[in-house]
Image 1 (cartoon, rainbow, N blue to C red):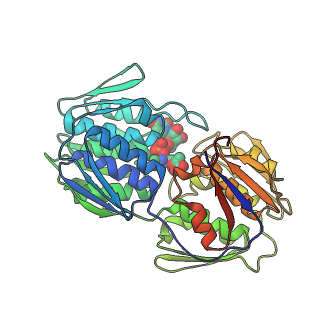
Image 2 (tube, rainbow, N blue to C red; image 1 turned 180 degrees about the horizontal axis):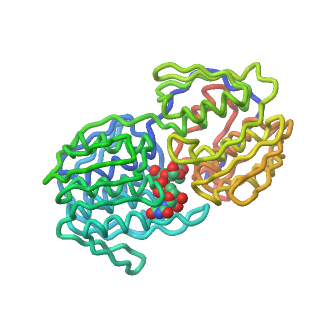
Image 3 (cartoon, rainbow, N blue to C red; image 1 turned 180 degrees about the vertical axis):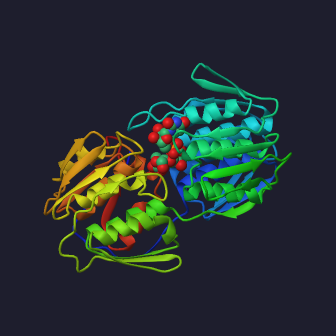
Length: 422
Ligand code: EPU
């Protein structure tokens, strides 16, 4: 297990290119199980969750070839419909194979994802939706066993907007008999990217980019080639790195529109921003005081829960008190005690944190617990005086493509140290 040793206090300056979106790639890759042929995804990030999905797809018989951020994945010879525990326990997004396998082959056996680092993350909406479409679903030995000779179009309305359930059911509906209507569908950019890829495959979907999706099933889909969208969460994380080090950074290959809620909050904190088509410039070099800014996470286009921990790190050095509320995941605060080890003054109150800004953080050893929590610790380490060790950064490697190289290229001092005891 590797760790990062960060010497804080360096203002970050320069240009950095944002990678392709992890969460769009993790939806698009299993969608290819709906067709038979060679699919291509450009701008695929080299992150461990993508490698886990590649292994899972390999296991199902998909032939993959991943070079220079282009993933070729051939679904002509699927030999299994089973997603084993060893893959699903590593990554919950493995459950995305359920809808496509069931819809194309009439059978899927997928391990139930277990708990998650920050509390329950149910998949009831995925299963209830598939049942509405006529699937027979039983849970046995820790596995979901789903059968349907042919899925049928259905009316589905989510009580809670869910990225994963929207993706899974939209994929399943593309090959169902008849029309499926999904209301309160997620409109996250990763879902829109998935829908656009399905359309390239020949799927009939109306209402893309809205919360009402109408999917008319077709008999078969063909292989397709597409380019992934930029990762909005990596982009937001890099912007906060620039802001809390009082730096001056320019992000390339980004979709500013996907990040509007974060850009507005950054401006409210006093940071200067300017936005071009695929580029965002942030200037915090003359920022004396970071203004405290409250944030409450919500579904897209609201402030993303995946930026909550990073925002909390930023506000820990603001000049005053701020509140951050997570209304998507009520218990996603594992980073808070670790940030406090770095000298932050943050209290957890139910699903909110109250952050009393401190003038400076001080380096210490801290432990990563999940992907975005780790990102917040790296950010805090960049701002802290002295040396911070962030242990167990394998969490970070799941979703950020060699983040230390990107940060070093804009002036950060970070060393990756390999070692078993971390
Ligand atoms: N929910 C249910 N039942 C379900 C599904 C979801 O009650 O069947 C609830 C969840 O408990 C949560 C809310 O609905 O309160 C939203 O969960 P959602 O299903 O949208 O999350 P997800 O699809 O499991 C994706 C991202 C997460 C991101 C969330 C929210 C992927 C692979 N993962 O998860 O990303 O936090 O949407 O935006 O797309 C990350 O990248 O670090 C990450 C965790």
